Length: 278
Image 1 (cartoon, rainbow, N blue to C red):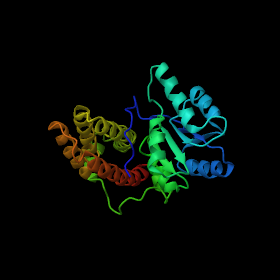
Image 2 (image 1 turned 90 degrees about the vertical axis):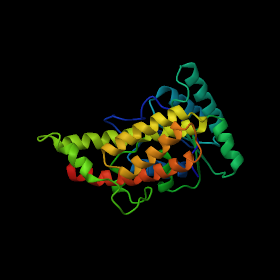
Image 3 (image 1 turned 120 degrees about the vertical axis):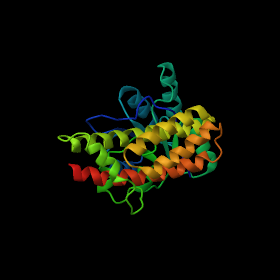
Image 4 (image 1 turned 30 degrees about the vertical axis):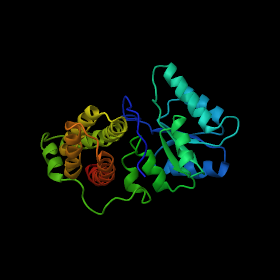
């Protein structure tokens, strides 16, 4: 099912960092900690663990994290209360909804999902989950390391096709005779880092029925997608932009789901190109 509406971040979480993106894992079950930590590590993410909600709250306040995986049922302070406090502190600091928080819970009931979102969590993952499911949810909120999609077969599946028109990248390469390859690498990395931000912005715009933001975000992503040769994704952006122009969100959620799936295919193709450039 499509994820809930995302807050518009000021920048892609972790974009441009030399070190790995940091995830705070709030989980009290030691077995679950080991399994989830291994999954996160193999996704190229740096993991810090908190064993209860109080530890998670203090860690979120004291550390710089790109995302939190929050177990709902923990001792001392549960995930709901911890999330509520994190959001309260963010609001007091003038940065409302700045940190993506993904609920992890053994309950798959609709009411439980609604409770998570009401507490201020941004997304939802039911236990037990696979690395593929974990990567798919995290990828909606932060840019996963580019090469993770190449080296791990159990990440979200992508079609066996080239989702990129390579002539577009050849045109970029031709802009610099001496450093064409480096320029292509820079453009690819910028695109892969920026696109999750644009998709998150679109998700929020749909939830808020904000067709102005919908149009602007779709237009921006349409342009950047065309620049890297992601022609199918660019066309989807054009369709989304049209909805914004006619002040409608009818069918926007379905288009966004297709866009997210297409972006995974595009990222997969760009990974292959990037490895050849290095």
